[in-house]
Length: 491
Image (cartoon, rainbow, N blue to C red; front, side, top):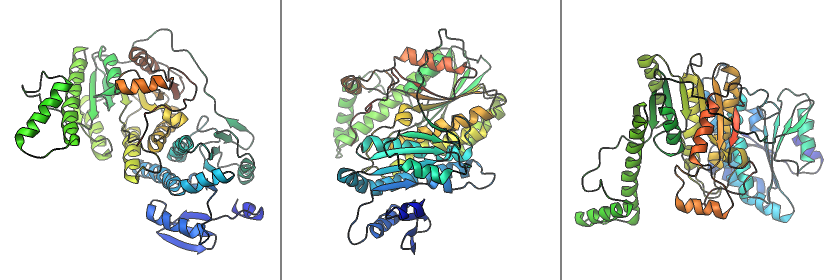
């Protein structure tokens, strides 16, 4: 491709993975793609003393980065992070060049993946899952820089026509965001609306069943656990929060306003200096503890037996030991809801590599661990909570969109391998409940964004548990049209 583009008069520079920055030739640089400082130095070398702008960024890493033979879960999750993080750091470094080139006449970000030529819908191997996060990065980048033409082309890596097909796509700079290429076909993706099942079947679990839930102590996952609790199953909740102790008599009966006032009074009595942030942190700790204890109690009141384990799901060794322990103690895990996730919404220009890693790895590392440790021969369902930010992209959420696209493609792969298990990634739209505040509801309403009623969301999720032969990657939202934006303004 570089030879063909150079012959057409383009100035082409090639970046390959390496250590620090090594100039291999005037056209080729080996660079540590995980190091922002190294990318900044190579950026200066590329633009030169005249300060030329980079007008086109083509990411071929998903095609050229090969996985080691017989890769284990650790190798896969590390490869997934490195591929996705490399693209994030590249667009973070070159975003200003691309934006200015767009204003001056046009610019292009082209991401090339090698799932199967159909974005994993026909066949998605481990290499495809590892590269899937780059799909989310590009879609979120497009939301933040609408002037830049952004495209993702998924190819069949075995196609003998691959190089020419990609060159042909460069002649279609205003093609669809997502294009699939096989040796014989060019396809695009389109959502197909389908009605929810007319009747809710009972979940495929009973009083002897064990259901593992990550992130189930709060939010929409807790709402769904309440729906499962009537089966009287054992629900094993995994959350980052420590199990809170019972509140003191001083705060137990206070509402939010009274609790904040009490926290201020306690700080004042201590004689120590404090800030509004100190007050909010103390308030949040007590408030979240209240919600967690209330939810766990409601699970029991609804009929479930409950275990709670305080665990950071990014600690895959501890998560793996817990799964092994459940099989040792109970002999079974019948279902899994993987709802763990965090957000740190910031635009690409402001998002730090540390925040990107935290958001991405919370969802993805734990998902790879679950996929490795679970025993599909007895597992009835494995539900991965994804988001429409993965399907459509969202401002400020390059990390969250990337993580959810990885979950989507992991579901595609496991669905083919675990033939007796219902595997599905649900790309949720926003709910009218969970962590959605009144202020956020007003912002959604102002943008014309409809929220999923809690009861309907629970019903839809429970219906998916019995949808034998259902699609492994679905969108559940109050509408299917791509939203123009669906989060509050980011910092």
